[in-house]
Length: 206
Length: 206
Ligand SMILES: [Ca+2]
Image 1: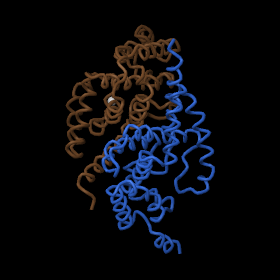
Image 2: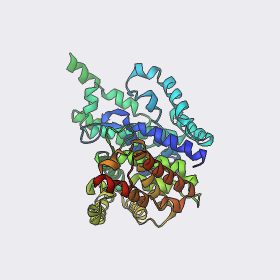
Image 3: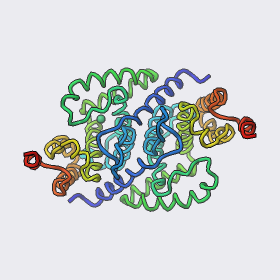
Image 4: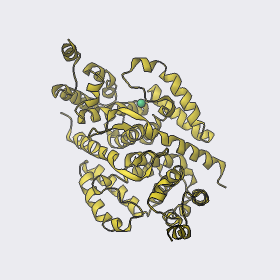
């Protein structure tokens, strides 16, 4: 028999497989299907490795950032994906996600449960530099996918440029260069008609 | 305008999105669709974090293992997924994957291209402890999925226990405990009829 500690770890590893069945609002590039949370999280980890150097207070703890982005969405296994522009769904999001964290992390041995839980909390609180970088990536990655799918999901959900600008505003606080990237993508998206300004949307709906 | 270095990094990040469209032979748990390479890689990174302590020569460089598993399959964007039990497809796999590595890593700034390329190479060569652990995870993860989908993909592909034992033999070389886990899963899979022994298959086909 394998030791209990390993049994607990495997139970968690098997349970979080379900994150492959949580679909996000945005599409993968090519546009034929929605992205899963597991794919999104893989992409964030790749970005953390490649883009960490642009953070103003570099060096930061890249391993910690990676751990955060790998687990940041597992609570959606129970709580579901709350669309970032959904204000109603956002209201009880915290309660639902805390309950999910409780159930999922407790599958692990105590010390690992504590570590992941506190990393998840840190990500949600956005206080540390690592958490702020991880959150900036969590916004930049879908922006890249929206831009490279000609704004398909923005249009289907009636999203306007002011919402996207607001959601991405924390990026320039941690990196001038990444902030500039976000600004350029949003401007070019408006120019190309992928993303409507509030004025354009009002005109369109009138 | 953003600096050229960041442009190169973003070009790579956008290009590797295609790994979300490379489907593997195995199914996600629940069994309704095949797993993508991005999902598989996310799962390996989670496992690296949680299971590193079982490696005999622990501590090892976990960040390095994570980087390896995150990128180990990106060459399949060009080369496709070669099924691990496909001996014919295996023949020119190396040539196809080297060409893919060449094209993909060169999108990055020189220093990052070098780093990821050499990590990919290290993974393929399986010489370092980190590479051996990463390879063991790359075999253990699908084993967990096969077991939890009642061997669906083993049966569809006519795989027998001797092939699975052979493919997973490196695990016990780096970890007694993980080696024991592999052994138990394979034995229980045979017992439950998820996986046929060569004798059972011969009988079945006779
Ligand atoms: Ca592979």
